[in-house]
Image 1 (cartoon, one colour):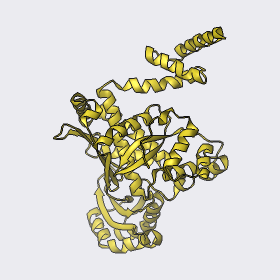
Image 2 (spheres, helix red, strand yellow):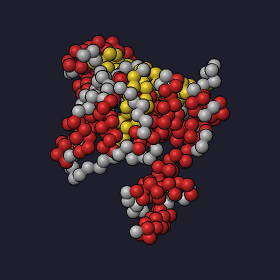
Image 3 (cartoon, helix red, strand yellow):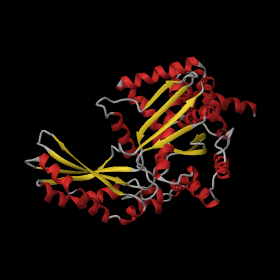
Image 4 (spheres, one colour):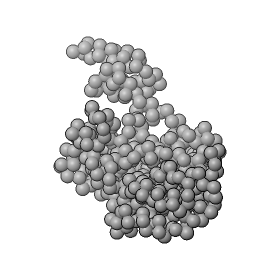
Length: 423
């Protein structure tokens, strides 16, 4: 297969879907499911008190090569320019070999908080003395997870000072395999709470997963050849722009938001928990005590741009909406991922690509040019443009750099009057 599909953006939606189906193992039933989307009966089984559905557009980012594999990327997002930027950035990465990824594996933490302990450091030691017993108790709760190589792999214990006194917090380190892991680790934490109370004294309150998944990191790297991205000046501009996000939290917030434009779109498309991944990413960006960029950019000896990213990506392929939502199931199939770890690495590559595309725009023509030309289409539709008028009105507004509903309405009237005169 290939993810390089020239003119893909010019095709109507049904032809785009057929083009994707020709490249990946997607059958007619799955095509119908994507076209139909989620139906009310399915939604009723997913959440409570259903009254309808709130859907966002699903698009495909093209041109990605990840670990030598051609990949089409399904992205669910309402924001204009995100998918176009990812596709463009991935095209520029192809000359340098695409994206190379790695990870630390699908490991999550659960926290068990014990309070009211007079001798917290002695309690910590007592819990660690019973580590093997506690690990065995937890693993008995999920024999299937253990069978596939997962389960509790370690226990850590911390004494944390607070204004309400010291707390002894036990961390269960759990390999979740192809699950995101929230249900598994929460069940284990709740089951161990009474035994930890017996061992340490005091009383256990919180027993729940941590979304700071610092043991579940995904990484990606790409080399963008200077000649492919606009020359040495653009390389310099990207490095300077990226450095501001390293040292200034005001810039880092917007910089990382751009990363999450890509990350969240793939997480949502595959039916995973967007809030968990976003919480993990932003807390990881703050791990030094200052909020910082999740990416880094450098120049190699050839003068080319090298971009890297590292962030927690807690996603799964079993459980949750991924196995229930028909479009999410098809999105996973389009990605051709075989494990949750594989999915997390592809998501990291998309985050890096999205960030590169935004930085390149900032370092060259400016972020608004591409974004606003796509935004103009939405404004044209909002003003009442239909069919061919949408593109005509959007193009005029973008050229004039006057993109608002009033101007769109004026252009619609003008173009409609011309059409009537022609008749």
